Length: 84
Image 1 (spheres, rainbow, N blue to C red):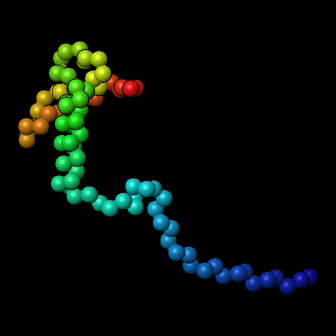
Image 2 (cartoon, helix red, strand yellow):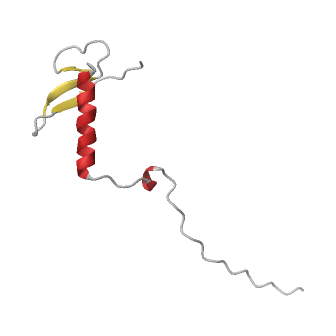
C-alpha cells in the first residue's frame, strides 16, 4: 500500500473583471442621458422618420409622435423598422 499524497493548497485568485463592455464604461450623469435623448428625438423628427399619431406612417417613417412629455418634448413610439 502506498502513502497518500497531501492535497495541494489552492492560491487565492484575483476577482475576475466584468465580462461585458458596458460594465467597463463610465457611468453617465442624468444630464448627459437627457441630452442624448433630446438629440435622438430631434434627429428622428428632422429626418422625417416620425409621423403624427392616428395616421398611416409615410414611407421611411419608423416612429409616430404619440403626444408630448411634461417638458414639451415629443413622445415617440416605434411602430416599425427600416432596412435602409
